[in-house]
Amino acid sequence: MTEETGWSTAPRLKDVAELARVSVKTVSNVVNGTVPVAEQTRQRVQQAIDALGYRPNATARRLRTGRSGVIALAFPELPSPYFAELSVEVIAAARRKGITVLMDDTGGDPAAELRIASGLGDPTIDGVILSPLGLDRLTLLSRARDIPLVLLGEADLGPVADRVHIDNVSGAREVTRHLIDEGCRRIAAIGWQDPAPRATAEQRLAGYREALESAGMAVEEALLPPVRTYFRPDGAAAMRRLLKLPNRPDAVFCFNDLLALGALRAVHEAGLRVPEDIAIVGFDDVEEAEYAIPSLTTVAPDKRQIAELSVRCLVERIEGRFSGPSRQITLGHRVVVRESSRRSR
Image 1 (tube, rainbow, N blue to C red):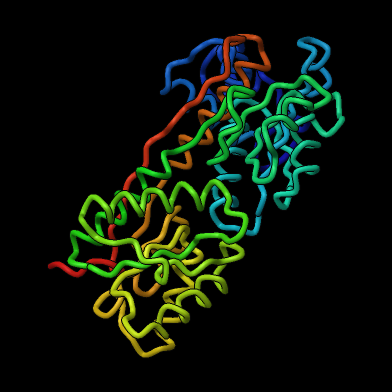
Image 2: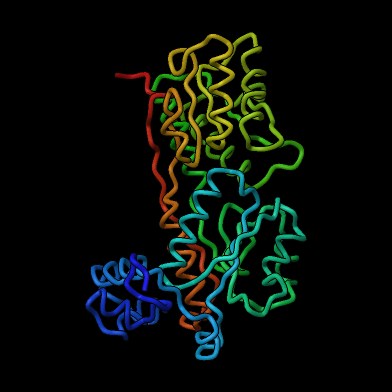
């Protein structure tokens, strides 16, 4: 018997039910997600599960349902804080349904993405959540194994699988509009990729252009320094190029927060002030954005909702509760205004 739980063997459904003061059937419904459970009851059951360290018996589950309770999750850049934070949310959402998540990093390699989309060639993988970067529609359609799949992110591969994403064009347009409303008139953008732009770059550039054009402002190619990747050094290098211009920008929209954090560093090194000399905004609302000096204005996707809906869509496919056409789910976002762009008082 352990001091923490009072059980000498692995906790059972019955133990969870007793601690949560509900029936075994209710615990089973929460774990398997087969029947809706009142939110207050679900939370009480989840607290009991967490307290006891209960884990479903994978062997018993597979014998009973033909499923293992294991899914795969893959992102192109796990070192990116955005993908790391989203991974945590997906794992938590899956755990609430009694599902184990296997993680992988594809590096944006089409072959690696196809391998993941095909279930890693492992018959014990029930389904896959994938954020593709290099995969194209025809290659995805050719995947060898028919396995439930949910796609995340900007890449629109057509009706080949359920997809959960946000409106990147709208988010970029709104945060650029915010800079205009703050009085900025020469707004640069860091994040364009040349010669092979990704969907993220294309969509966020489109939103930036729309905001400028609707305000009657010109889009200057000199204010669009290309980057290779979306990490801090790229943002700093691009910002240094902008600072060398004869007529430097008074604001910069960075296509993600890491580029913006790099840009913040370059401006500081140049002895300039943010936002007084140059306002800077980002995209993704990673945790570091709130704690940067100055704190970073950014576009915040609802990572928890993205995770919840992607897991829900996948489970519905796995359990055969939904077999209709591929769903394209667009979720909301908000512009979080912080110190890096707040000029008006």
